[in-house]
Length: 119
Image (cartoon, rainbow, N blue to C red; front, side, top):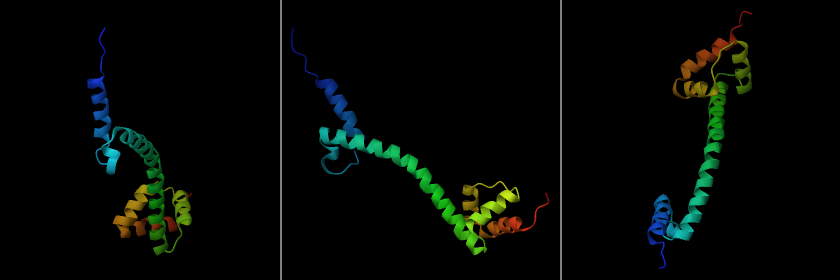
């Protein structure tokens, strides 16, 4: 029985990896062994960074709301507490967008929290 060389299958497998690492620098997108390692690390980083991106975005939102709240003469934690007390259900993302895009509307929200609510 003759010897079977795995040319087609190997070429296809290598091509798939090399196509995936097309933008990587240096030999990381040319040589198969290095490219395979590079792809493994890239996929691990993308998974980790997908999760950390959510944390970073929330942190940015809180920073924006805090800065806008301090312009209105109130701290972030006092604002969040006042929002809960006055039963205004705005999440941090919408507060951040309002503060960033329309500061006058944000001031109105802050003023709404300062008025005593009827319980």
